[in-house]
Amino acid sequence: MMLLTTLCLQLLLLLQSTYAFTAPSVSSRLSTTKSSSSIYSSSNDEEFTGFGNVGFLVLAGGTGSRMKANMPKQFLTLSGSPVLHYSLHLFLEKLPEYCAQNGLSPPSTVVLVMDPKYQPEYQPIVDKYNGKLAFANPGVERQGSVENGLNKLVELSKENNGSPCEFVAVHDSARPLVTIPEIES
Image 1: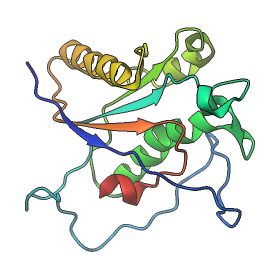
Image 2: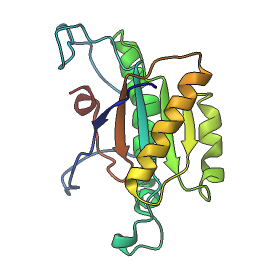
Image 3: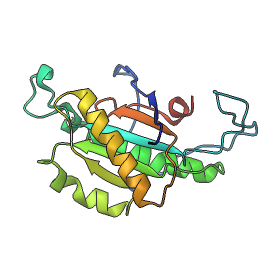
Image 4: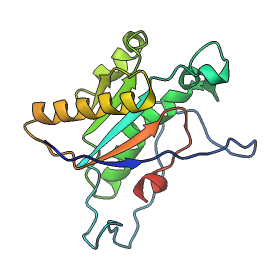
């Protein structure tokens, strides 16, 4: 059985009125500059080569019941886009582009843990990313959703002839302001 180490990207960020960002779109580009210093893994002194061995779980299966909104908070709009779209844009567009610009391997798989009743609406997005994005159904509680997402990563790893997934990053889609530097650290 494949050992999966969980890196939790649960970032508690507060929206401030002075925080400036734009809604993600397919045509938007990330402006980054290549660092002249080497990037090293924080766990040891081996050179960091990218995210190819990292599976990303985007948790979007919650109901938002504590928020008392008419829909789950990941589907509420923020600057004209659903909150969930910021996370998808980050992991499927911005992070791979950053990796390409910096000679790093991009994430191989992103699993979107989502209630089946919303999956048809997001199927075109899954199809667009041709094997880089897959659905998993949520559990009754958050830990069940994470377990289902991990099981999907294992399944995809077997389907891709054992493409290793050594690490897992779990991201709550209702936290839309995560940045690439935060992911790297």
